[in-house]
Image (cartoon, rainbow, N blue to C red; front, side, top):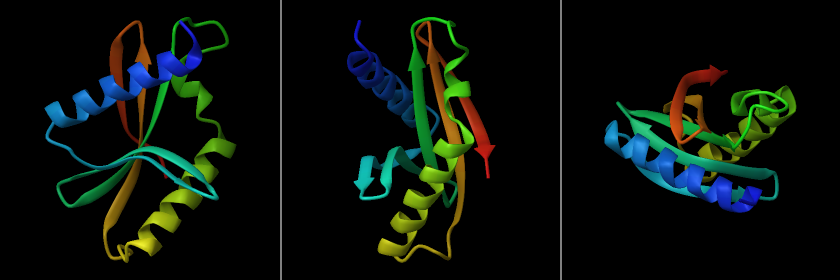
Length: 113
């Protein structure tokens, strides 16, 4: 399976997981010139920016290890843009990672700040 298809399947599994756990999806694949955020959701009046990582093998590490400091900083920039664009700076927010491996979903809450 190619990485695009694996990523698409991972994002569907992640969205299903979030909905099952009472998150409201407000945007997916939010893009701007600064980058992209896979899923933006809300739960308990918190905006949750979610990075989804899927892998088919543990070669080169677990999916969560692919969310490097560089990637975290890019996500923070895009999140700041999203909050500014939507006038949401008064809202609490956090950054989660959803790891998909062997069709298992691991939700890492507040994965980085």
